[in-house]
Length: 123
Image 1 (cartoon, helix red, strand yellow):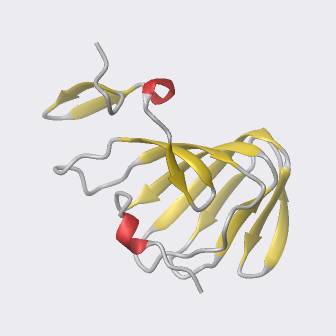
Image 2 (spheres, rainbow, N blue to C red):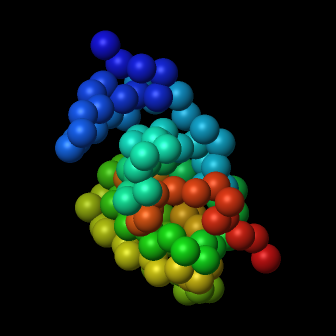
C-alpha cells in the first residue's frame, strides 16, 4: 500500500517511493512529484517534474541539482546560456546557477541536500 506521499516502504536503511502515485505540486518549472521528502531525510530527494513552457528562472543558495531529461526536447537556460537537451541528457547545476527548463519536458531532478522550498530564489 502506498501512502499519500507515494512512500511505499520506509525502513531504517531505505525508502521506496512510487513516483506516479505522488500528488504533483506546483513548482517554478511546472509540476513536481517529490519523493523521499521526510523530516528524517536531509540527504537528497528525487522529483519527477513535468516542465511547462513558462518555467521561471530561479536558483538555490545551498542545493545542487541533477537533472535527467526523460521525455521531450528543449533547452536548459543555465546562467543565461541556452543548452539544447533531449532524452537522456544529464545536467549538473551548482548552487547559485540561475536556471530554468525551456520547452515541454519530463525530467527527473535530484536535489542534494534534500529539497527545501525555502531555498528557491528569484531575481
